[in-house]
Figure 1 (cartoon, one colour):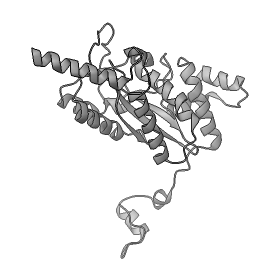
Figure 2 (cartoon, rainbow, N blue to C red):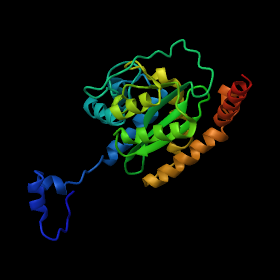
Figure 3 (cartoon, rainbow, N blue to C red):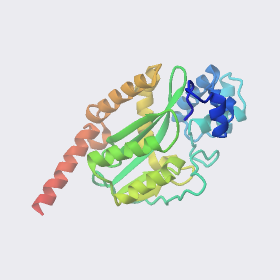
Figure 4 (spheres, rainbow, N blue to C red):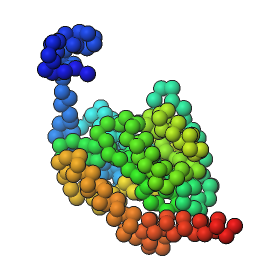
Length: 280
C-alpha cells in the first residue's frame, strides 16, 4: 500500500493521505523473547500430558519446576498458543463477536464410514526462534489426515484453504465437527460448508475431548516429529510436517483398523462403499 521509494510522494505524505501514523509504518513486531518461547514449549509438552490444566495449575506446575512465572504471563502464553483445558477457564476458543455457534451432537452417533464425519483443529508448533500454527482436517472414521496448512497467524484463511483442498480431493463430508474458535465460526468457514451441504457441529465450551481423535493426532505428531527437531524456517517446518503426515497416513499402524494405516482403512472402506452402491 505504501511504497518506500516513491517517485513523487514521500513516505510521510503517503501516510498522511492514508491516515496512518508514520511510526506505525516503520514499526516491526519484536516477537516473543527466548524465555517465553522456552516456556511455551514446556507448557505445550505438559498440556499434552495434562489437558485439564488451566492457567493456575500450569503456573503452579512451572513454579514447582523452578521457573519464576506468574499467572498473568501463563494466561497470555496459553491464549497465544490457543490452549483450552477441558474445563472452561480460560476459554481460549471463543467465537468472535457476532459469529454463530453450533451444537455438539456427536454423542451417541454411530460413525461407520469415511466422509460421514470430518473434524478439524488448530495446534501450536514450536520453532527455534518463534512458533507457527497448524490446522488439520481428519476423517473421523478412519483417522486419515485429509488436508493441512501452516500459518504464522490465526486468521481463518489457512483453515479455509485446507478445507477447500479436502473437499476438492475427497468430496464434502456429511458432518464437520470443530471447536468454537473464531476461525471455525467465521463466515468464510461456515459458508463454505453450507454451500457443499455439510452439517456443522461444534464442541461444547471447554470440552477438548469432544474432538478426541484429532487431539491424539497432535500428541503423536509432536512427540514423534515436532519435539525431535528445532526448525529454523517455515519451509523446514512444512517439509517436516508433510513427511510425518505422509508416514502417518500411509505407513504408521493404527489400532482403529487392526494395525493398518489410516489411508488403507480410508480407501478400502471407500472402495467397498462404491462397490455396494454399484450393485444396488
